[in-house]
Image (cartoon, rainbow, N blue to C red; front, side, top):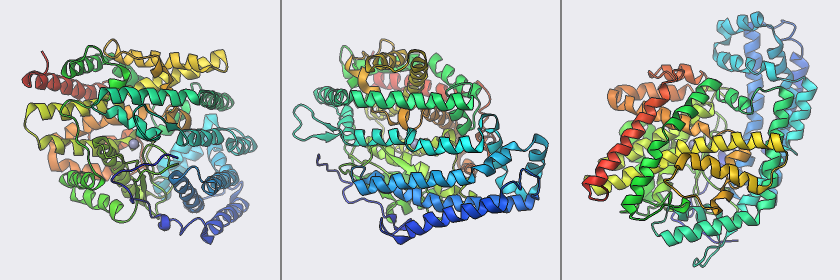
Length: 602
Ligand SMILES: [Zn+2]
C-alpha cells in the first residue's frame, strides 16, 4: 500500500465517547438491548395507534420510547461506520460495519409497523394529533412521516425491502468504497504510488505538467477498474429504479426531494436558474485562460490555482485561521469548533485504506459529531476544514432536538458548512490589499463556488440522463456513460474548457452517485442560499448572528422553508435563486476588474 504524509499526522479520532474499542462488551449489549426493547415495544403498542386507542400524551411517550430505541442502535451504527472509515481494508472493521447495518435493518423491521400505522390514519385523525399541544415536540417529524404515505408498502413488503438492501444497495456501496479505497494511482515522475484523493489533489498544483500527468494516472487507474465500477453503477441505478417502481414514485428524484423536504418545483427552478447563468462560468474560465496566458484550458487545468498560487498550509495553521474566522462571527461558534480539536473529534491524517473525502457525522444527541478529513496540506484542505466544522457546529447545536429531529435535510445541511467557508474566505480577503493577491483569492474562491454550484448541477443533470438511459437501454457499457458525463459537463463549460476523452471516465469515482443518488443539487442549493444569507449578514451585522445560531439550533424540527423565513429568506419564490447567482456574477465582474488593474487581462 502507498505511504502518505502530511502535517496532520497523528490527528486521529478518539472514539471512546461511543465505545471503548471494537471489543467493548457494551457494543453487543446495546444491540441486544435495542432489539429486545423493540420486541416489547411491538407487543405493547402494535395495533394501538391504528385503533385510535392512544391519547396525544400517550402517543408522545410512545414516540419518545421509539426514539430511545433507535438512538441506542445508532450509537452502534455510528461507531461501526466511523471505525470502518478509518480503515476500509481491515476485515474486522468491515465485519462490524456489516453487522451493524444488518442489526439496524432488523430493528427497523421490528418498528416499521408504527410508521405504517401512523401513515394509515385518516387525515382528520392525524391532524387532530398534530394539533395537540402534547405532541408539539414531534410535530414536524410526524408531519414529515405522513408525506411518505402514498409511497409506502405493506409491512411485510417493507421488511423484505429493508432486509434485501443489505445484499443490494448497501452491499454495492461497500464494494464501491473498498474498490475506490484500494486504488493506487501511478503517476509519471512521482516516485510513489498514491491513493486516489492524493492524486486528485495534484490537479490543484501550479505545475501544468504535473496536473496533466496526475490526470493521466487517475484516468488509467479508473480504466483498470472500469468493469467493476460500471457494474456497480448499473446495479445502483437499477436498484433505485426497482424501488421507485414498487413505491410508485413519479420521478427518480422523488425520494430525494421528499427526504430533502423540498418541492420538485423548487429544485427545477434551481436547475433552470443555474443553466440560464452558465455564461458566467464561460466568462470566468476565459478570464482564467488570459491570466494564465495559455491558448486553451483543458479539463486538467480547471482547478489550477490562480497565479500567485496558494501557499501550502499546515493543519495547525489552518486550525488557527478557521477558529479566528469563526470567532469574528461569533465567539460561541469558535468555542464549539475548538472542542472538535481539543477532544479528538477530528480524524485528519492520511492513512492507507482510509475512506476518501471528508464528512462530519452528527452521530447521536447524547454524544457529539465526529469529523473526517484527508488533510493534504493545501489551502483547499483548510477550506474543507472550515466546511466540515460548519456541519459540526450545526450538528452540535441541534442535538437538543433529539435523535429524530436533530438532522436537517441535505438542502439545509449544506448551509452551515458553506457559511463556514464564507467566514474563512472573508477573513482571508480582509487581510490583503493588492489587486493581484485579491484576484488570486477571489479567483480560487470562484472556482470552488462554481464547483459547488454549477458542477453539482452538472452532476444532477448527468444522473438524470444516466437513470433515464439505463431505463431505456438496459445495462449500459462504460463508453455510453462516458458520453453522458461529457455531455453534461460540456453544457457547463461551453467552449471555455476543452474536455479530453480521458475525462469521460471521471464519473466512475464520484461517491455521491453510488451512496446518495441525486444528492448533489443540495450543494448548489446550500451555496446559493448562503450567498443570499451572507449578504443579509453583511447588511444586518451582529443583529443577524443570534438569528442564524437559533436557526442552526432548531435542526430538523422545522421545514427548510419555515426555518429560513426566520432569518428573512423565502425559498419558495422562484426568483430566489437569482439572488445568489447575482452575487456570483458580481464576483466574476470584480475578478475581471482586478485582472485589468493588475495588468493581467484586457
Ligand atoms: Zn458538506
